[in-house]
Amino acid sequence: MPSIQSPGTGYNPTVTIYGYLVCVTYNAKNSYGAYSGYKTDGLLIKNGEVIQHVKGGEWGNIQICNQSEPERFFQ
Image (cartoon, rainbow, N blue to C red; front, side):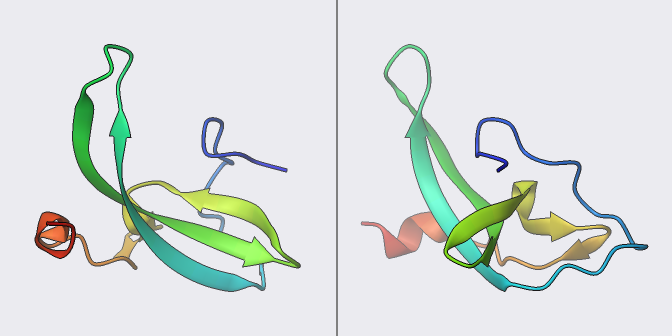
């Protein structure tokens, strides 16, 4: 199973994958313990497991997750 730390290969137009696509916005800490800023990624979930990490919320050349001003929701 791919994890957030080691995402899969990404977009492949010859393979059909079914599941639930959710967008997540997070503010992770870097190795110094400081927050690195909000990022939005996509997760493809099937049978309760993450089967694909969509870095930056972009699937192929299609932006699937809205990344505009996520910090306004987390104040």
